[in-house]
Length: 217
Image 1 (cartoon, rainbow, N blue to C red):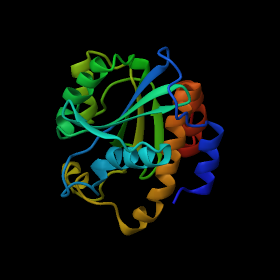
Image 2: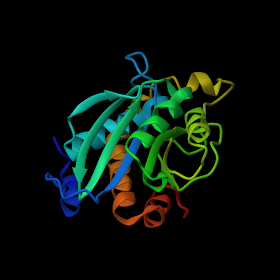
Image 3: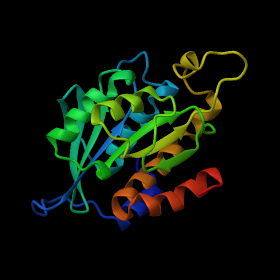
């Protein structure tokens, strides 16, 4: 069932169901994670989870397998939108993403990558227009394969483990029961942020969502 609050937001940025011509912008939105049932609910897979929600809310259901990725294509507001879940495992995400960027001829300013971030509080988000990988190996792989850091990120906070737990083990754990209760609202927010990036640009979206989620701009 579509959340009424989110449905109202989507209605204001109405989904186009028809082809509006050949001059439309193309956006590629890649959510990072690891393929397979053993990983599907891990913290490291919030990128995949976000893509699932975005696809549902935008009504995209035409699933393809291309360039070692699960791909869903659709039209939104006279824009072509490609939703991507790389199936290469996190550390090799750049192989799939770079191949699809070239195939669809996507400008890097129209590439949005959604990924987990240990350095942000759990279930917060922060938007970023570029920069280094900050230890996120999927992002490092994409930077290496593209030869550029200049693409948009939606960083989803998962916090850091307490005690002496290895972060590599922590990211492969599932969310706590309390965190699971808040995931629905988190992914609504991520969906709104992605739509605002496409509609109004990364700077306006940063002003809205970075301050709203993290107390800073």
